[in-house]
Length: 427
Image (cartoon, rainbow, N blue to C red; front, side, top):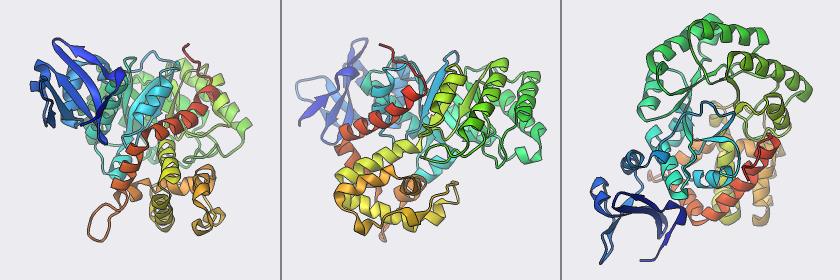
């Protein structure tokens, strides 16, 4: 059987040699030496060798993390700029690594909310394992984080921490209507029970509200947390304007600049970073974020990486894209229950009037981007009448077959974000 060895994956542990090999349509772990006994699910035993191949499972990823320190997620305390690179499919991290390794910014590769887990049918173990295998394959030894994003309960926080996540983003939206004191009490309780004394990055999210976070509200929360001995690494306010999914900032850029400066001043005073949620594609305010924060911020992206996957599908599997596009429009009302967008579907050119060559252009238009963005979960979990997946397997097969194109798409699109945010190249 033919295979390809990823050169950056070559590692050694004692008398055992490791690498990741592409075998047919899948990557597998190659182990040559006594460590073979540590892994499960042997696939192939190569003749005349001690080598065996193993699937890239959650269980085997846990063993890899025990053996190779660089594959374990870490805290990003002390890092000025950091970026969350949510990967809803578990296929984007290799592309993220190839881009991010050249820049002075700390990546959080494993970033998912409970909402995203429910919509994709994944688990925190699976999300982290996907990041681990990509880090190992690409030989990325600089360090990365894992964020349990928008968690709302003690049980959710415990679940993420038990899975090895190094960052907890606590969503306080359900407590804010009861007053800021209730928010602070909730955050303090979570911190004392789950975070205190551990090397965990604790972020507070107060952005999932209908009202803008005033400087006075921000200051009250910051002072109260300090009084209670709660140490946060970042705080996400609700900014003026709209930070909608997959499109640029909607609002008065000058007003945003004025208010962002006040929020960063408060954050600086209390020793944490400002966090910008739904941060992908906000090109009009990226220079402001980088400049006024003095390069000290956390920015979260997720759905834009899914959209770049859809772009590859539009280019390489046009008939599959047509099915997905039609399904997304038909199921948009259901998806709107989970996400706030302001798209106008009357602006979207009917797909029957669009040639295959022009299908990727849907990923450049705001209205179609938003429709495709928020319907990801419904698309991934759609079933045929016989209960088989309608799109899931074909999506993964297409992206695995065209991985180099997906990597290139991520490099181009996310690569536009970093310079505008003021992130410097390392070399």
